[in-house]
Every structure is written in C-alpha cells, then in structure tokens.
Amino acid sequence: MNPATAVAAESAINTLLQSINDENKSALEAMRHIKGTKIYTGTLAHVDNYAGAVKSTLETIQRQLLEKISALHTEHNKMIPLHQLPIEIFIQIITRALEPFQIRRGFGPTHLGRLVALCEVCKRWSDVINSTPSLWATIDILDPSAMTFTAISRSANHPLNVIGAPPYGSVRSASRLPDRCNEFTSTAMAHSTRWRSIELVVPASEEVHAIMKAAAPHLQSLEVKSMVQSRVHFQNEGIMFQETVSQLHRLGLHGVAIPWKSNILRDLRYLSISDLDEFAPSCEETLEIIRACPGLVEVGLSLKLVAPVETTKKGTPFTLAELRSMSLSLNPSWTLALLEALHMPSAQSISLDLDFNSDSGQLLPCVIRSAHTLFSTVIDTQYQLLITVSYNNCLTWAYQPSGTYRRGREFEITVRNKPASETLEEFLVGHSSARFTPEFIEIDLDLPFDLDLLPFLKKLDGVDRISNIMASGCDLDPLFTYMSNATRNDEWGFPKLEGLTIYDCDYDSSRLLSMIGARYGLEEVVGSDISGGRQDLPPPLKWITVSHVPGEADKDTLSLVQDILGPDCFEFDEDVERP
Picture 1 (cartoon, helix red, strand yellow):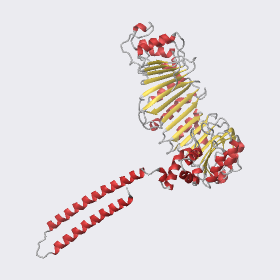
Picture 2: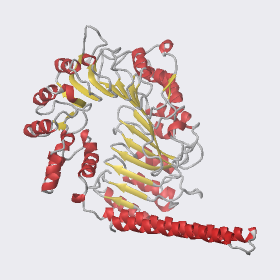
Picture 3: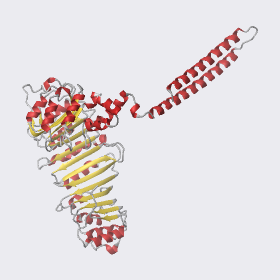
Picture 4: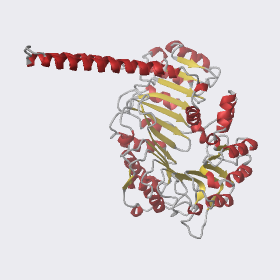
C-alpha cells in the first residue's frame, strides 16, 4: 500500500470527525437562540449524549482503520526484497547475523569467510560490505594471511576481535600450536591498541609476557593458553596492560599465571583458570579473586594438582547474585571450601569434578551435602537422572530437566578414584532429600571386563524409576543374573526397566535368555536356579538392542530371544552404532 494513501485516509477521517463536531455545536447554539421556543435541559442532554455516541463510534472506526493500515504497512515491508532495504538496516542485519562468529565455536567458515561469501551475492552487497569498516573487524588464524591484512586495512580504526584458536575445539582444549601461530601472533601484537577480544594459543612465557604488557585500552575479553606453564612477573605486580585496561569483563587463563592481586582480576563477568600446578593461586587467593567480582555470571576452575586446604581457612561466606554457571575441577577440600563460602541464588548449571584419594575420601559426604543445597535452585521441576560408571572407578551423577522445559539447566557431579559402589551409596543418601523424584533414571555402564558389577548393582536395590540401561565393554552376566532374581526388597532387579542397549560387551547369551524367560514367566526356558515361578511379573521390556554377538553359536540363542520378544522389541546387529 502506498504510504501516501494511508496519510490521505487518516486526514479524511480527522476532517469528518471535526465536521460532525462543529455541526453539533452549531445546531445546539442555534437552538438556544430561537425565540419563543422552550428548550428543555433534558432534551439538550439527550442531544449531547447522541453526539458523544456518534463521535465514539467514529473514533472506534478510525482506530480499527489505522490498525489495518499498520498491518498493511508491515506486510508491505515484508515483501520488500533484501537488496532494496536502506543501507543502515542492511548493515545491521549483516552485523547481527555474523556476530556469533566473532568468537569461533565450531566447524564451518570463519567470520571473514562468510563475509566474502556475502560479497559474492551481488555488486550492491559487495559495495556496501566493502565500505563498512565495522564488518571487517574480526581476524582469524584460519584465514589466509592476505585476507587477514585486507581485513585489518578495511576495518580502519575499529576495535578488533582476534581469534587464534585451533581448528578444532577451544583455546583451552588446544593440545598443540595452531599452524601459522607465530606469524598470526605477531600480526595481532602489532594492533594491540585496537584489541576488543583476543583468543590466542602461544608457545611459552615470552609470548604471554608480551601480551600482558601491551597497551590495550579497548580490551573486553581475553583468553590465552600457554603450551608450557608460564608465570608473568612485573615489578609492580598489579600493573598489567600498562594500566590501560578498564573494560575487561571476560578472562580465561590456561597454563598462564599472573599476579593474583592484579587489578584486571576485578569486576569480571566471566572467569576461567586452568592447567596450573605450582603456579596456581591458593584457595584463599581464589576466594579473594571471586569476591572481587560480585557480578560474576560464569566461573570455571580446573586446578586439580593443588594442595588441600585446611577447614579453618575457608573464608567468610558471600553472595554472587548473578552467577548462572559454575564448573569446578579441584581438590575436594577446595571444592568444599568454595561451596560453603558461596551463595548462588541464580545458579542454573553446576558441574563438579572431584578426584579423591585415600586422604580425602572422607570428604565425599560433606561435598555431596553442600552441593545438594544448590539442587533445588538449579533443578526446580521434574527431571531425568543419568548415572554413568566408567573406568578408574569414575561415577557421574547428572540431573537434567525433563523435555525442553528450562533447557540449559544441569547439575552434575563426577567422582574419580573412589569405589563406584561406595560413591553410589553416598549419592543415594543425598538424593533421598531431593524435592522432586526423577521421571526416569538411566544407567550407563562403560567398564572394563574384569570389574565386578554385582556390588554396584546391589546398591540399587529399591531404587525406583530406573528405565534405561546402556552397557559398553563390560561383563553383563552379573546384570542378567540380578535382573532374573528377587532383590533384598523381594522385588525384581530393575522392576520398571523399559530398555537395554548393549555395545561390545562380554556375556553368556543363555543368561540373557534365562533372564527373559524369568521376567516373562516362561518356565520352559528358565533354569532351576532362576526364580521365574512368581506371579508378580514386571512389565515387559520395550526394547533390547545388541550390537555384538559373543560367538557364532550364540546367534541361535539370540534368535530365540527375538522370537519371544518380537522383532520390534529385540534387535541384534554387528553394525549397530552407539548414538
């Protein structure tokens, strides 16, 4: 619709309303001046009411018409081709579309690679993009050198985003130096006064020191990893970046130690420190760093090889009102100290990775109790529980909200180097106080063949809602035996189990058949040692998937299992892949 049409329509309506109003006033005034005519107040009031009703009706019509005109404008704008948009709007669209790629998070083209592709759409797009410096203000180590220098030139004096992360993964996870590392770092260093954000992997302390002493007045985000643990020294330990940094809100130090009283460790929103041994901050210093950042939104600490902290040095509790995410991979005593010192009313994601030894094993109940004080904050609705047991007595206990509701919330604790059955027992005690019961529980067994499952399985007696089991690389005969007999609670092992998925496990297929016979009440396929004669049979399994057949002779047995359950419920295939 032509905009002029809307203006004309609105003008006509306003003229009509004014005309009616004027005529009403004139008529009433004339009636008051007619000689010999008796005017009653009630009649005049009736006329006034009538005129008011007419005006109200016309105003309603006007409002509805304007709403229709506005809707037509919206539809008209939707049909405008992108290449006809005003330049300012077009630039905003391109900027917003490319914004996520200013920090590389995955595979695919780089920021500049995508920008060049947009330039190839048409000449107008190319002209607009090439003449907009802000669009070129991101350089990436994966781009050719010529493209990097072109971007630096075209971006004029706009603050730069510098991405020196490896091709796969993050700066923190880098296991080697990216190609062209030295060349790219030198190029980036030459423009430090323009840094807005920087991610770099460097060889050692020399490069780290050069970064930390550069003038960077626009720096807002810094993440750096040294392949050799490095410690930065300054004559005045608080002075870094020549005291030019005033906007820094994100800091990641991986294999890099700085003076822990530095002014840049203040008022951060995002903090990550990892891969430090003897250069790591003490527990007291760590608490002081966090205390100096009351607006923290996300914190991640991975400092496993540090000395335990004494219980008397935990510090005074304080609140981080905006903290959403906390990931700790620390000595258990450190973890306990932080959990007891921090109040996090807005927490949405908690991840704890605890490596226990014989000296700190007694701390597990305390850590679990402290962690579970956060549980109702993070998980405040129905949830799923995933219990994973893997190598080296590693047990992970992970909660996630059910379905898509409150996605992004998670509560996870991993315990290493402590018997899985003991860890499970402690978790079950802590879990008993949870506000909600899980909708279902899934168990993932990823174990070596020589580990006995039975002590672990017995700890699960009476645990309701276990619906799925996924097993990989372990001996499943104890599992099939457990599922075939009564437990200490006189119930079936995993009475509500719905599905069983098996990948490359060692097992006797006849035990699987006996378990099916027992749970389905098929006495003709049940051995005398199986309690299959009971009447209270559990619900039938919905699926069993087997990806590995131990031997050729076992295929006949598994075929019999398939005949019992049906092809829709049982599948065995050498080529089944793990999801």
